[in-house]
Length: 302
Image (cartoon, rainbow, N blue to C red; front, side, top):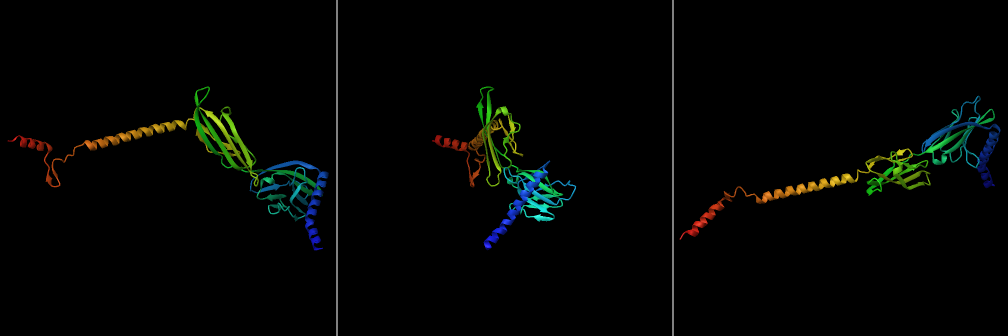
């Protein structure tokens, strides 16, 4: 008996909600929809306020805010009835708050699944006035990362040039976007890899693209995904030429340094000390020429 009563109590909110939806649909069919449609945009994780029209001649007795589901009945989000708050859908209970005076509803921590069409159903003089609010959710992509690999090649026409393989990637964006390369000539660009994936939990996108770009002179390149733009890099002509110059300068410097070392060493080895004639450790040193002449005198005497 207790279980039956408990089940009956648990079913009351569901039955009330179903009755509310059915009543709203019937009244909507009788009153018709207004042509007014408001567009609002919210960033992922932020808050957004749904504002229903306030141009009614009489006070609003009831206000229901619902979300339109394709192929299904509208889902009740939140609302009020004659000054009393109506319990929100459990999914939105901790994220939504209705302002009766402003005829609005604030939604916190917006997710991608919140995107879609909402309906404000205002009852004025027992007549339903329905207006639509279209919510778009956006999430900014991370600053794109650009990688490059360039090499020289001989073209069939126009002589030698530079072929660069450029890769661009960004994460965490919504809606799905694609990479673009501002400033690059499309006729010299060839897309060789284009891949996107969606995060199962947050429904945000990761975008990757790789292109081949041919050019003959230094070119500034940046990549754009959604509203995020990468840092500018320079390709074609700035990678190979400076390396050659640096290598040549380094070779010359090493050669000059070795030459200077050689000259210094030779001077040190060939230079005769100036103090050979004098005293070494307190003893008198006889010049070499005098030693030679004295030796000749000794050998010539009988």
